[in-house]
Length: 345
Image (tube, rainbow, N blue to C red; front, side):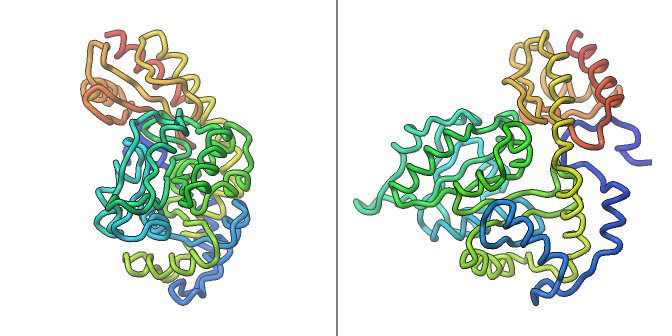
């Protein structure tokens, strides 16, 4: 018996298990050696994702962190600078990879989640000269993980694109949950793709595939990305088994994200009276600020676990709930019952 059989697991949307249909697609996948570029299912996935975002090419990678770091190395030479926010995944949850692998210097603006002020970003861009580290790229996160699943407005992204063009720097999107933004705001994926030089998009979070992300960009960039992936140990052989899960997810699990958003809204509505919601819930993440609550994040998680509900602890007074395809309406009912009781004390 597994944790998922016993608990309502709201820690992350990475805990999902492949559905029956996804497993069947994986079992029957046509495969080849992807390091030689000969896996037909990987090739089909890469072409499909590139087309969805209106770019020339894409590259399948084992993880979102690797996809991000490949993309950053494409747009920021060693010793030069990346701008992003202080809570960005690329500088918070990728254990210094930009510096360790790419020799990239990072500078951050104050964490504001999806509520980015383009004027603040524009003022931070440093040109070459005067012995300063020149800015080469700006990175944003859509949706924003530590920003509670917030969706950066299209108008903000367009202004950031203008700023990047004026400064002659690149714009990268950590699009791990860009599918959620697409469903929440109705912005076409190609509309997002047109704004960025590079994107990383994840298949193993809300879409429910067991493994995999893609780097998206121009044909020239993706040719370079293939070399960087190999250098980082990300070259895979008969990876079509995994790519088949991604193709199944794209066909069956994008539109259904609206159901996860609705379940997150139900959780937020139930918890709102306790004054612990950190921000408005737009997608599948429900952030909790327990600063004024009678119990801290670890105590909340322990009390909820004792009653069969798993909660993610992000800090001493910060917790998070995440809805996904493995949590049904009955699971949400149970979570509401347990969490309201625990918060009530």
